Image (cartoon, rainbow, N blue to C red; front, side, top):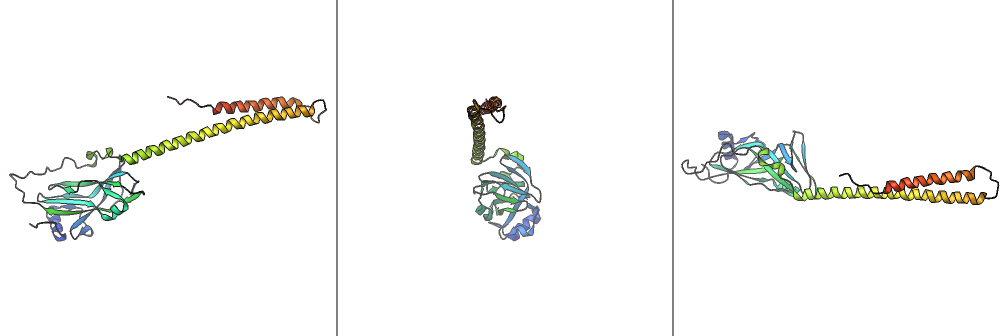
Amino acid sequence: MPVGVLLSDEIRHYVDAFDMIRPFEKDRLKPAGYELTVGDEYVLEGERKELKKDGEIWIPSFSVVVIKTSETINLPRFLIARWNIRVRWAYEGLLWVGGPQVDPGWVGHLFCPLYNLSAKTVVLRYGDPIALMDFVTTTPFNASESQPYKRPPKRVLLEEYNAVELKSALYSQAKERITQIEEDTKNRINSIEKRYEFFFGSGLVILAILFAALAVFVTFGRETIIPVWPDLSFPISVAAFGLALRAWINSRPRKKPE
């Protein structure tokens, strides 16, 4: 049995002997490891979703995503696997927050927790190479003394990891703050609109009163071209006053329903 990290020929040998990686693609095989790809299921900020073959995962800044690998791993008892995010995605701002070692005897999909540390949205697509896994031999397994790994493992499904409860505190607080700012801005705009209605109505009253007073002053003791004009001044003033009163009532703060 080889000692140390398995190279590509040994990885292929154990794939054939134990069905160690499924599905296995030659293009994903590297000199001393194998690329794992984005699968059809993920959890983003507490929401579990399915990913179609032509789908994308948009990971906002400071948010957490848990991704299921396309591949299933079937490790014999004398091998461990170690995996980590590809350097390409690390430079995009994705930070690996999972456990690097896969115990001997593990069987099933793997789940990759990632944190977007960058100031931009990172996009992942179905089948993107997300992590690189290498394989290392262990000391010989002693059936009477070595502690065996339970097969199948206790947790093999994404929902069994409580991934929906994994959320970024920074992202959640920022989202709440933005919502609060939007609400405050909306309230201020409504307040400005009500003040505008009030002052507009008040202006109508003042103009109507001045206009009526001017008409009375000009026509007092004289014959007017329009005889009914003095009689119209008072109704116009009353109408303007009504508009102002309505604007004042609308501008008053209303109690929020409990």
